[in-house]
Image 1 (cartoon, rainbow, N blue to C red):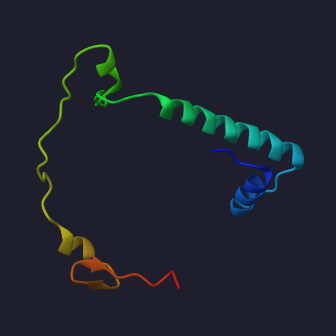
Image 2: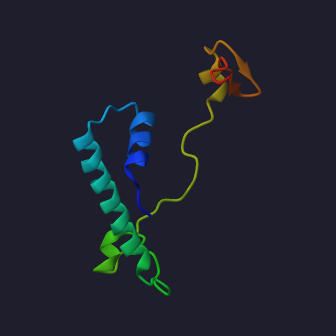
Length: 99
């Protein structure tokens, strides 16, 4: 994938950035350089390689210390929603912000 100067202008417009010509060209080179790196990584055959659970696992055996997934705090929904201006079926009601 490669971008052109029109793409950079569009991205800058969407981000509300004003880029001068030299900045736009520099940004084009940097973003296309990033895409080149991504394409190189995609070209590597990773079949049969398991993902790492932790970066240190690449150099030594580690066991992750995971805790049990249990609720440790009491349910205080009613108390927390008491001061809310509007609640319905356990949910906070807020004004509509998207037309």
